[in-house]
Structures are given as C-alpha cells and as structure tokens.
Length: 152
Image 1: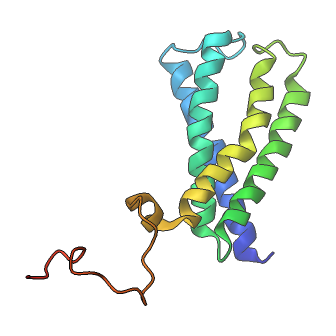
Image 2: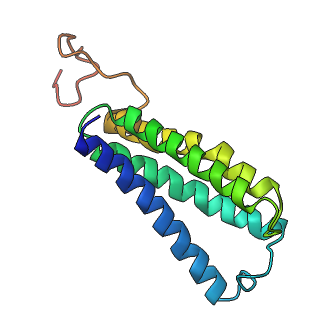
C-alpha cells in the first residue's frame, strides 16, 4: 500500500468522523439530543445509527474515488478500520451508560457493509446504474430494429 492508498483510507475515515461529529453537535445544539452528559434512548440511538450509516457509505465512496487503484479494496480497508475503531469505542464506553448497548454493536456491525456499499458504487461505474441492460460488446452489430436513427 502506497501513500496515496493510505491517504484515501485516511481521508474516508476522517470524513466519516468529522461529519458524524458535526451532525451530533448540531442535534445537541438544536435540542434533539439531550445534553452531552445524559444518555440517549433507543429512538435517538436509531437516529444516530441511521445517519452514521449514510455517512459511512459516503466515506466508502470518497475512499474509493480517491484510491489510486482497486477502489473497492480501499473501501473495504476503510470498513475494516471502521470495525476496529467502533469496537474500541464500544469497549471504552460500554459501562458509561451513554445509551443502549445495541448502539455501539450496531456501529461495529454496519462499518464494513456500509464502506463496501460506498466503494461498490464507484467500482461498479456509471454504466451499471444507468441501464438495466448488460453493456454491449463493441464487436456486436446493432440490428435495424435496435438502431433508433436508421431509416427503413
């Protein structure tokens, strides 16, 4: 792994951490979340999980876009780093009564699949999402019925 690869994964990780923190701060400031020293309940933990899923998918996408090669492999690496970080966070906060115990476990469980989804959207390319038809091989001929500008 070279410096561009490490940079791509680091950029994705930092983007996810910063974006998640910004959303947390905003939700605390506007009163959706209780004060920082009070625990959140199941509903707010579900909200946090939902936006972290979206943000982590975006992080996987960013990592894959910045990757010098093999974008999906870089996104998966981001997911593995995310699993390690989420596991460390779960261990450190487990007995602090910050919220339901399922929440940090959900972050561990969703880190890799979300990063994969974001990376897959890059490695699949625009053609796969634009059409349900398989790509046409350049050597295949287009019949008269298929060609829209052909005059009979």
